[in-house]
Image (cartoon, rainbow, N blue to C red; front, side, top):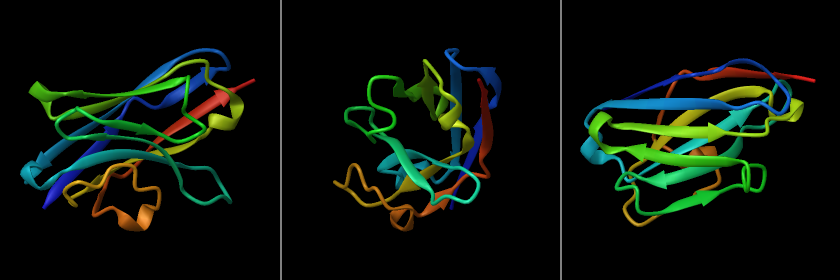
Length: 126
């Protein structure tokens, strides 16, 4: 099993930044990619960004391009999501997820991921 724990959410004003973290533990050798998704009330879960566990490849959803950066801290088994220029429409619960499938990067459907964290709330005020 793989355990994922998100942290770093909070309340910020529009235009400011937040850095989310996803700490992985357990059988991390099973992980091929880690992704961030988000879900706002009444909406479907939306793909944000993904990174291979090696840190060599990244892929971003349209909502993240140019403002968010995903990165990997190899020493701490942690993936970060740096979010800049936040907007009220970025308000959501942010989840990290792990995919075990070797060679697959940028899977957009939440159904394709094997392990999930509990989520961290991000609220952006206008």
